[in-house]
Image 1 (cartoon, one colour):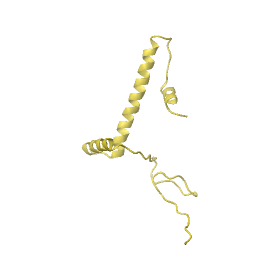
Image 2 (tube, helix red, strand yellow):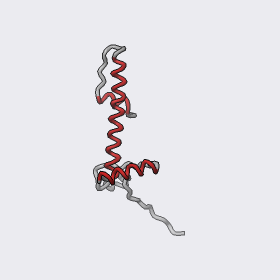
Image 3 (cartoon, helix red, strand yellow):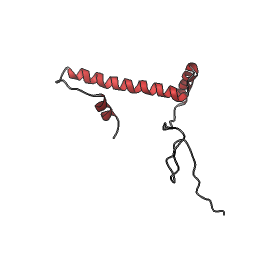
Image 4 (cartoon, helix red, strand yellow):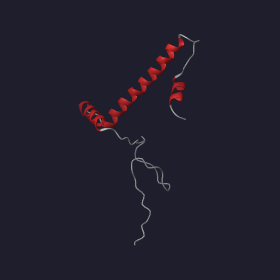
Length: 100
């Protein structure tokens, strides 16, 4: 048997290995697995609007996060009627929502 040397594979989400500098892009890549029906919808949206698939996902993800924030703040506003006033900053909301 031949000795196999260590092989470093350069893929879109590798970390710095043996002091080799990072990727050619400044944006981090996040691999996501989608159901076929959702993938088809996003591809059609991208094609129709002449934008990349990643831009489409970015649009829908931002909308979803804004809706989540609106729902949270709406529930907080409904709760304010029954309690004393409470201020919830944008930063405090995301600190509660996102894991540490």
